Image 1 (cartoon, rainbow, N blue to C red):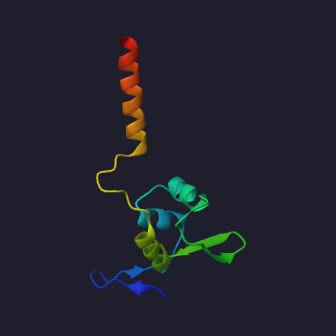
Image 2 (image 1 turned 135 degrees about the vertical axis):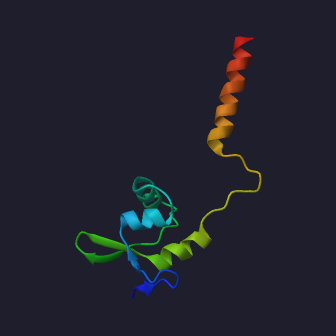
Length: 95
């Protein structure tokens, strides 16, 4: 179930904890839980190993990356658009 890395010879776990799954996505554990709880979540369902023990399949998490929503080319993040709009409104109000 665990794979051995060809480069380092280290064992790569097949199942990841919350921390490991978040690290795989390069996000915080809190953000991982937010994404997981979202109604339209792309995060795969966890594997239940016990009443309070959940793990995520590394392979399923990696496959989910391919299905993640992509930003449109040249698209500006919503929060930047909102900040620019507020800034332009405050300049207009000052004049």
